[in-house]
Amino acid sequence: MPELQLHNKPIETIFQLLGEKENDITYSVGWALYRSPAFLKEFLKATAGEHEKGVAATLRLQDYRKKSGITDIEIEIPGQFHLIVEAKCGWSLPKIKQLEKYVPRLKKSKSKVCKIIALSECNADYASTRLSVSKIKGVPIETVSWREVAGMVERAIEHGKFKEKHLLKDLLTYLGRVTTMQDIDSNWVYVVAVGGGTHHGWRISWIDMVEKRKRYFHSVGIKGWPKEPPNYIAFRYHGRLQSIHHIKSYKVITDLHDGFKEVPHDNCKPHFLYELGPAIRPAHKVPTGNLYANGRVWCMFDTLFSSKTIAQARDISKKREKLAKKHG
Image (tube, rainbow, N blue to C red):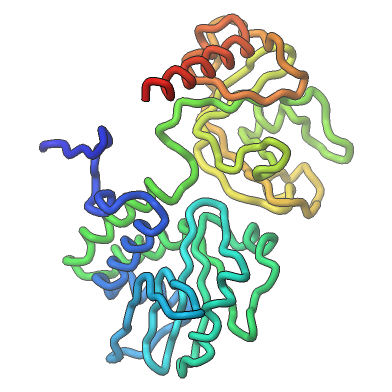
């Protein structure tokens, strides 16, 4: 089978030809909702409830109205549902001021169920800590993650008609590429320092979290921590690099007990919880080098195996990146 490339990247679905920006994702989802009754049914069921048959839905993309902004997606079934969907990439959520502009549209609607749906990478727990309100002038705001949308697509593939399945499989592949914030093509490794002791009141040490439980957690984008999950993470303790792991999966938690039963229940700010793949250990000792005790650095994967120290791997990686940008 021939291979199609765009800007040196393989094209797997027609949706990729639209692009991978926020509006491109919105158009792709809107088109699939329009072309697949099964997907539309699953989306409405998850966000608004069952709808009566025999009444056609109207979908509007990027609909502009004076003084009420531009909506990403509107789904309206007269007398039943009127949903305004605001789609975001990554772990960002729409601003309340932006959502307030949409309220007059829904207030004028004669539908029984009127809602604003905020689509993003955020799960419900994380979103609840970031959205200051759950309603605006009586209009409910509901958060839905892209992972949940993918689940809707999967169910639609299972129950939809044959002619819908190919489109939905393409959409699922596309969403898998553009909505997750874990860059699966990246060879950058996030190297973190792990303490040797056990936090007061916990029944598991920092090292055992990694070595025995194959998990790790950190704040979401606070004090220098990543805002997006890396593809690889490495751990250093006892003065040297110990292991590198692919991050198999991740989720956002607001209670560390959800990730480690040995940690008492304790509400906290949002944290990424990583499930770690098998340990990849360097063939030779790689000391820390000239780094702060708790310093966290980014290194290209191969440099951690070819450098004398982690600090050297960091420096080589920075030089490569700078050179690539210069000639890119």
